[in-house]
Amino acid sequence: MAILKKDLLSLRKEFKTVEKKMELLMKAVEKSGKTPKAAVRKTATRKTVKAKVANKAPVKKVAAKKAIQATATDQILKIIKRFKKGVGVPTLKERTGFDDKKVRNIVFRASKEGKIKKSGRGIYVGA
Image (tube, rainbow, N blue to C red; front, top):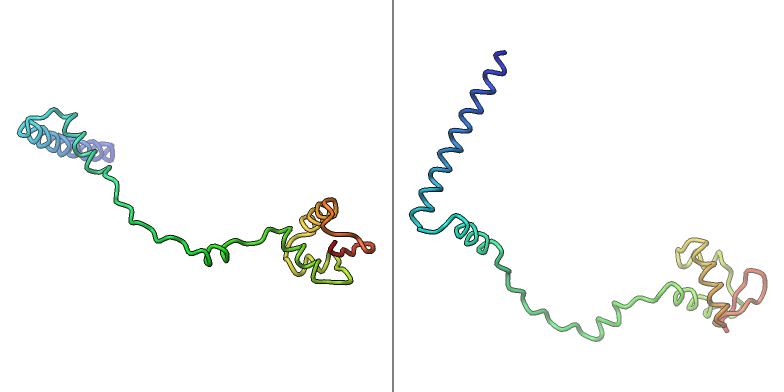
């Protein structure tokens, strides 16, 4: 029971402080001669002002070319074309770091498009 009474007393104090703050706000609004909505709008517009964006320097063409990375298919085709006798899937996985399924899918698609040819079982040569 004592805890409940303490809670109620603290709530009453908080309500009194909120009431005092409301009275001060009402007085401030009355002094300015504006309606409460107008006062709220004015404060809201101040907070939502956008910051100016500085102009960015144009990107150099040399830097843009370096930023473009080869696709996974390009990487695998490049490796296959380096080997004259052909290369296997384990070597492709090791050099690229791709998983088995990704390498197999890329090799299948490239052979279907005629970019590479099979020279033996699991050995691929550039066309």
